[in-house]
Length: 417
Image (cartoon, rainbow, N blue to C red; front, side, top):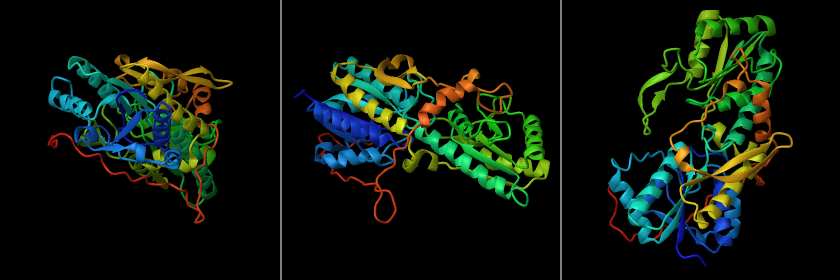
């Protein structure tokens, strides 16, 4: 049995398949006879010394995690600053790791999580503590570099494409006497990957979505209204998909609400209703809008089979990379071919990943900027492929178990922040 313990933690917005990654981490640790702990509410649990002993989870409970959405033992939005600014917190983490003999740390998250894992690996080295840190990719935004796609995105993309296709049929049926413009707002502050996924719902110019607005392209109000007007006159209705983070030509968010969130990001105020109101006021059309918000990232009932497989694969690989001493790396996905779709998990240095952002490339956007190209379809289509429904109970609802574990006794003074 390897000496020491492994600590796993989840960070940022959870997804439909992040617990599948956790399931694979725990199963792989058990195969390697490694004692795995789980931090409550991400890195905050490590700072607070709130750790769960996963050995108390039965094999059936570990397996059931794979079809349960959300974060089984909590996540967090908590960004550690630079090593110089947050030295005390980094040293506290190493103290906790030392107290519980944690030699491997797996942080499952996006850009900020990759940054935390990288910094922790450096601090541990400076303090002479033997710690191997591995980043495990996760984000519905799909904006993490160092991986072809991010587990969690494929399922959110499938939910988006299906929801847009279904809603479009509803709008088309009622457009003659009801809604003419329907605006569907998706997540995506700086990267329009989810908006792009909506493009899979239809192909021809008369098929929904008729317009997609990306953060990668400046918002032109006049061009937008002219296109909506033309589509309504030609088709009878117009379905618009918009990323929450579209910007004016001067760089301001169209839906900037003022203030900052815990990560220092500008708070956004809802671009979907704003655009719908614009169409109502300027074009005199009846409008409707929706913001699926958490629904798009938690819809485990509509998970992509590809996404589930990749989520589990990065969890398994992360354990193996950590035990092999691959410090400061990400368990990233590398695409080998589009058709047939083939991929594998490879180690990528966190040094070139932390605090970087992968946006939708120009070649994935249609020339007019209002849709996706054939290249985008080739990239996106395999990621939403296949169904992976959860088991259902007699009441017709999915079986989503909620595991309960006691926290390990603390060995250090309480952390006060």
